[in-house]
Amino acid sequence: MRLAITCFLVLLLLPATAGAAEIRTALLTDDGVQYGTPHELTGTLQEGTAPLAGQPVELQGRAYPYDGEFKTIAKATTRVDGTFAFKRKLDRNMDLRAFAPAQNALGSDERAYVYPRPRSTFKALANNRLRITQFLRTAPNVRLTARTTFYLGPRNAKAADPVARAKPKKIGRGRFKATATVSLPRAWKGAFRYGSCFRYSEGSGMGAPAARCPKRYRF
Image 1 (cartoon, helix red, strand yellow):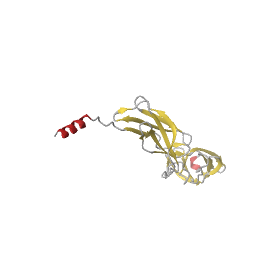
Image 2: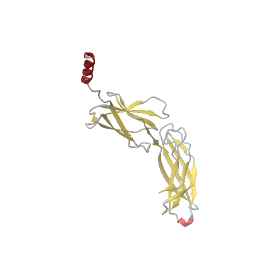
Image 3: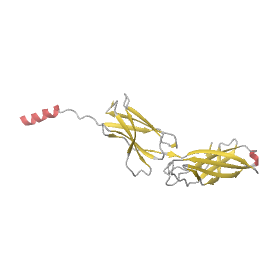
Image 4: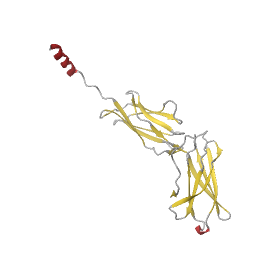
């Protein structure tokens, strides 16, 4: 009986186990960004309900094709309320996560998409024709193969149908252009609206593979 009572008292006097630190993150740019625009990730480091201030946090990344090791690409320190933030430009798609080394706390993986940066121009040609060109800026050593879709509608159109498709041609390091020549209906009297869309190029590592161009382009 004495042994049983002693053991019971010892168990009562043992200190409570401290709660494990937890790191939570949110990728604010989860829809993706254009090349040259930074991704933004925010997060909170806390233990139970208590924020952990003044703690080092690392932003780790694993670049496309996502089969390598995560590497530290930026560092930050938590604020008084345990929050932190990262703003980082990426060349290609990348898996991101936050890591607090002092607490050995690891956040969940977030896939960050980086799309080619587009710019479109047009030139009026003879016989009521129009030449539309889409320029695409990418990271170096990227190869774009998916065709660009061009859309054309009258001046007051809310949406436009596809009128042409063209494969982008490389014109420099990380620079491409796709060009299409289309006819303008005379009834439009030279006034029009146009748009363009490019799909994911297999193996480029730029953009979401599941993204598709719309059947009709909405302005």
